[in-house]
Amino acid sequence: MADSLNIGQKCESKQIDEIIDEANKIWKEVKSANIDVTDEKACNELYNLLSQDHKDFKFTLPVVFKTMVYTKDYNSKVLGRYLKKIAIDMKNLRSMDDYLYLQGEYLVMLYKNNNRYLTPDNIRGYREYIFKHLKSDYDETAKIQEELEKETKIKEEEIKEQRRQDLYNQLMASKRS
Image (cartoon, rainbow, N blue to C red; front, top):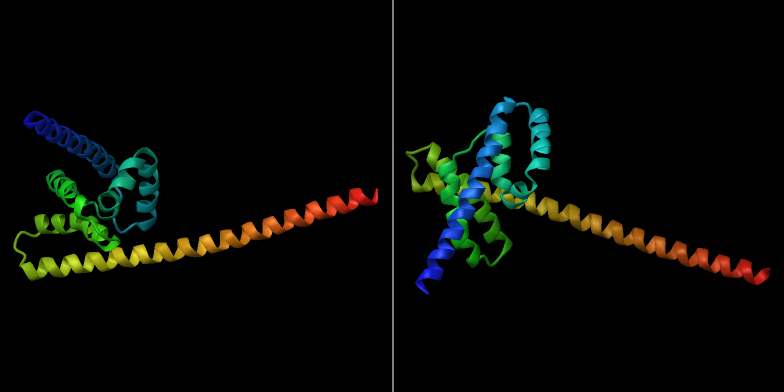
């Protein structure tokens, strides 16, 4: 039993190392692109370009990916601590809000790393700011998705009705012949 626990821990550690290696590759590409963070168009182009080569990373760790590209901020040690936190905390997620807090925790950890003399109130305020921003983005995306689903359903109904009408017209035309 102890051996299986050690194997699981090694596997998890190996996965974390692989993720960090991938992040380090992305970070090298971001730095070599030498794009100014104030140039939103260039950042968007870089984001889209890197998204093609690193799809899994982008979807698995979207906040980490966007932070690298749009703010040019990354620290592999912080990412390692964050990944260990995710491994533990993912089991306790009960809601989308919990998930969003966990996603934002990377930014909080990075902020704490870059600003060593923060008070707990500073950290709590930053955490709430990040959560509100992520929640707003999520709500906006959910609203757009809901609207698109409604539009798709309406179009599907229109297509079904058109097919029924076409079939009826064909049957009526063949009946007359």
